[in-house]
Image 1 (tube, rainbow, N blue to C red):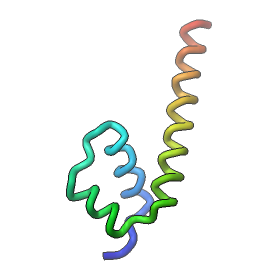
Image 2 (cartoon, rainbow, N blue to C red):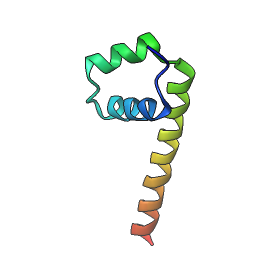
Image 3 (cartoon, helix red, strand yellow):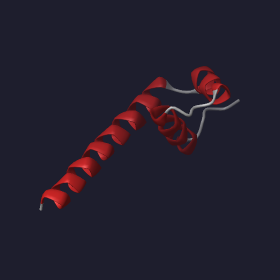
Image 4 (cartoon, rainbow, N blue to C red):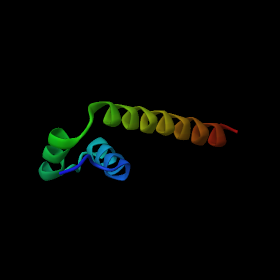
Length: 62
């Protein structure tokens, strides 16, 4: 199997973050995935999440 696409990496990181990653996909990620790609996508997702939380709180507080 070839390297997972960036879309697969994003979906896999999102699924793992919310706790619904299937064992089949997890095994595929560990066998064919690139660790730096998963780390980068995870960090970008975390930063975007924090920005979204800050924006919502700023809107609520006014």
